[in-house]
Image 1 (cartoon, one colour):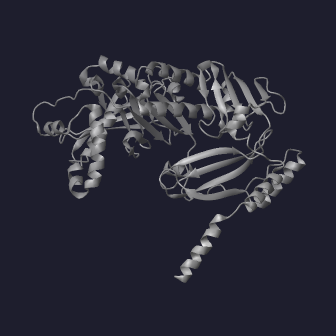
Image 2 (cartoon, rainbow, N blue to C red):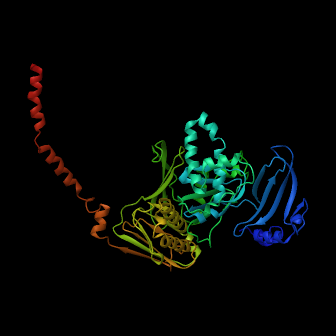
Image 3 (cartoon, one colour):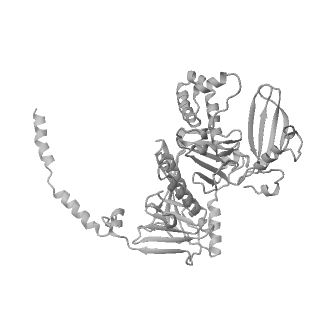
Length: 523
């Protein structure tokens, strides 16, 4: 929520108070022409209609959305041609980070969730393989968004049917799924367009009894000025918010930096050497010389196009060397990153237990190897070894990733709609409470190869909230990791015995081939 809400409540009143104030006024006094009368919340401005070039009316409403920020709602209508339009603009500043709002629509009541879509927001519905690029701002609901998709995509369908049958078929499949959500049929829409008389108000999709196929709505706004409504509190299991740092290209598109402004240059070898000398003089640890990045050409596992995998060796203080691998496909946008150990196999396993008491603990760096299991006993969360692969992030980042993976996979498959739906939603609420550190919890990392790491904020002194236990692996663990059959000493004699046994073995194939070849020559 923007800080200006508390400083300018008169200029941007809450939308609920605006409604109450408007209802108390007589109809003729509910709008005012280009005056800032505090008793009249809606302002009217005459403006040109771009369709018939006659004078229409634009209404402006300055309001604020709880838990969000101030916005300006604009509505235009032309009485001459009937054209109408509405738009939303943010009245606040661009946020320092971009935001991604994700809403899982599992029931029809979720269609009534309000969304604010700014003019820099991209709307994504993964189940439909549909991406709506940035356009005009909107204050609507998920149902209204689906109806706009039907209107915008269906407008040119008769022309596409003739000019591009393939594009027509793909778009028609999207429209059929959208019509199933809002309960509309193509024939009914055509009949309504040609009918005369009073306009028939469509029935709200949330009031229908037909089953709803679950889908996901994702709002990705680099400016952070979009919003999706949650139900109850921010612990809503069907709602999630993730922030991210903008890229250089996104900053250029938002006008924050000039296109010709040079990017920050990497330090030259001379500057690096000077930095090293300065560090040595200040008696601080010298930086790790792991600046080389290896490139391995490969194939994208998603689309099959060639792509490169980049590998860099990184030293983690008070731990060991690790290899960070990153893959990014320019064709389909597939991304993947993984972390593997760059040191020898430890003779013992490691178990790390951390008592998380406040949000400062969420900033701890964490390296979870692919052989590490993770558990949080307070919410009965157990991740087996191999889940999420290898990850080098923060504690907050890995909890966000666990939440997104569980909610996306389960909600997308429809498993959460069965008899255990309430139990799973309750579990997601507990997981979100853990993410926000609403109560203390315990994090346990169990790695038989001791390749995992959790940052000690008090290093080199012991951390009072963290315990590290080394233990001997069981025979079953060594068997699963392939260590029982691994021989690293005295293998030269075994290799010589294998070679000698191979050389002493008879070669029947050669003795049989000689007479055959002589017969072939005689013939």
